[in-house]
Length: 301
Image 1 (cartoon, rainbow, N blue to C red):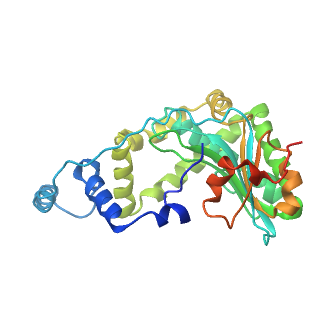
Image 2: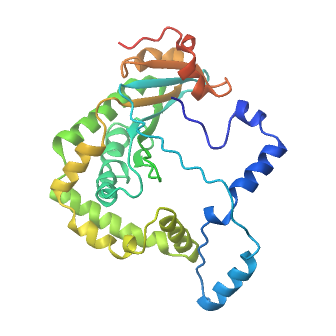
Image 3: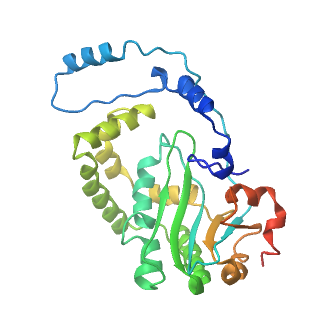
């Protein structure tokens, strides 16, 4: 199964014409798919009347597509190597499926990922940048959506240190499972998240955006009002549980973009299935899954 970029690619964009754009607009740009958040120095009743008058001609009747995509979790480790012959560095992501925005462990994971890869002093950035000097930055994130999003670790390093950087990344993930989180580490994460959150709602634009996001996911103001209480309630045992449940150890998916002639042999170490394709080929991310001839003899060790 291959993903499709929301922005399109060379093959898909070539198939789009004016009629397809117009039809998509008529079918999907409808009030039943819209969320409007208004924040500012205003009279609520007056604004409601104004909006009702302005949007009254907007009629419903669009096509709402909700697809049950099921589980996307891979059943074995995989690696996609995208060959960029002029690259002096390897950019890599390692991950698996994550969580949806409405997952009840959203707040515990917010704290846990702050420690693992969500701030400058995180475990992954400390290991790859501060301690080893292999990169200028490394991080991890949960891309939360309506359906289950992705978890990924992201960084880059010179070609020559690709193997070492990948080894360190996998080792940090392994130790995270083995060591868990201490009371002191958890307290640090709690203070950090509490301190950062007000910066997300400083402006009217930020507040409107947050309100729209909550509405989109079917959530309400309790996500804000109860946030600090939820944070305070998290224990080290809770943190260890979500590490075990949501941070993948096996069946990892690797994506590397770099100079295949220099890192190809290294890449084969990390996955039972390796695909190779060229960054110059249109739709290169889907080609690797459909054309085994692109693997160019790469074999996992």
